[in-house]
Length: 317
Image (cartoon, rainbow, N blue to C red; front, side):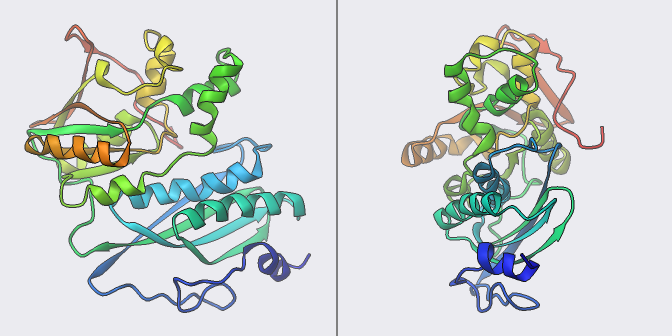
């Protein structure tokens, strides 16, 4: 099938959020008055970010989800996306499933695909996401202050646990696999939480490469330190039996692929975060505090300092 026929068949749809969408040399957008444009790009490479035989429906979901998660971390409403694909060959069944997964999540968040590119090559997916945030209200990494609390949404470590299983590092029973696989293959971007944190959180980041590594970006850009309580980290029942082992600790602290939000909040606004958790029906855990200084100290339940060799995923380490 010719390239433009492929685009027309699988990726061209009406673009209600754009002046002009797929089909021309460029899309035309109009950002609402009083809004700023938030833009982010993520690439997923076969063999690095996903297994070559990954379910294409789930892969379509994840390709967009990891980008929408960046919008959530900025407190931005996701609005538009572009998709660049390199494919080893045309595969109608694969494209049908991939585009279905992509558009199912796009529709759930009212995201319009407005353009992109296709070419022949190793399987590679690159999405650029764009969203709107009121002027001056974006959540950033550089606003954490001494005295702030550190919070995280949802559960940490399930994606890393099931990935360790798929890589042959441990055995899991069928029930545990079923309970954790969704975290790896179909993460849920926390858009509603990001929007609710506008004007409350002092900083935020999505946990894509591991809690310690991503929190470290906040600490570095805010020029502060943090103390984290290991016992307060939110782990699922599937992961808890492994937390006494180095593998379980690595999953919850440095495993990555969580796509939860880690954010800091002035201590005086603790009750507001609890109210947001109740309103969104989303677990939010206070896991530590920000202080003056540099670096992150991790404390066990008895108050002793824990040493973790890995802090997060690094493509070039």
